[in-house]
Length: 358
Ligand SMILES: [Zn+2]
Ligand SMILES: [Zn+2]
Image 1 (spheres, protein in one colour):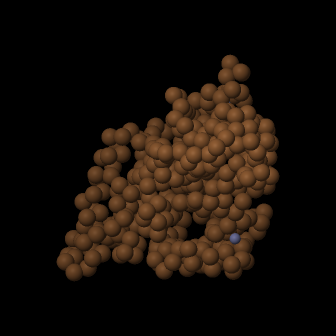
Image 2 (spheres, rainbow, N blue to C red; image 1 turned 45 degrees about the vertical axis):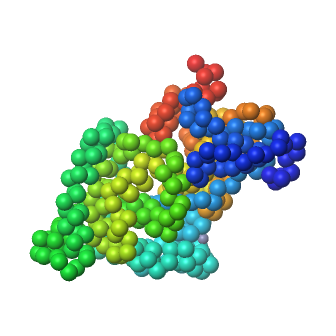
Image 3 (spheres, rainbow, N blue to C red; image 1 turned 45 degrees about the horizontal axis):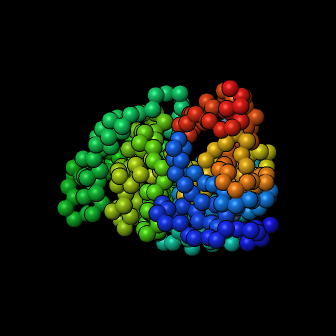
């Protein structure tokens, strides 16, 4: 069933005052709610299996390094753990077909390829030394910890910028670069930052869509996680193409973390209830759907696009909800589901299913 086949729709007036990047459709609308921020509501009866929305607005994405040989860098295709045929070693990605590789190179352009090549050279040169996995039970850094961590690297960042510009660089400036390059690296944090910065560089007018997302002022899981970001900032200042340096700022990197924190979607295998977690990405329009434990909308990833379909017949005025839980997590008890939601998304679930179990 297609969107246009839904009948008896009320006259559609495109809404005003919507956040940049929010989804617009004749069959649903975005409204503010007292408790759950912005939410999506049916404007009309929506029959089961109706395609409600497709999001192909991927901004940044992270493919964890451990999956880089098995998951296509372009379409996220996966063949049960088999190494993909095409490996682009200079940029550190593998592709399922030549077409995907060509598309990736075309979308990234010269500057993107140069940036990923620089990252790959640094990461490869260092071998495996830092573990990106963080213990999420540690206390999260507070706003003041975050501010002071970013302030603590500002002076070194300024020296590196001068060193990269060349002309007036002295020994002190060059020392700041070599000190940065000797610090431990966090490859997945680096991928997150590079992916976000490249997207920002290629889509300057679309940045407002990221800014419009609900933000998390304390997005770092632990002090180690925060330190990984501030160190990565210095690494990137030292290695990225000069043309990117104006947007490589503490502010840009913090915005990426604060908007990604509660808005990213896991990129998982399409089989086995998504048991393999390859990484994650941010699709702004897709992030307006709230969570429910028995959702009336099912989401499904098709390559780089998310499809949202009615999981049942939906009455006009009902909120459209997806689940933020993976296939396995959905089977947990209410208490365990809530712990997972609290830890990963920062809220207590008040959906009808959870309320009925109280
Ligand atoms: Zn592919
Ligand atoms: Zn719930």
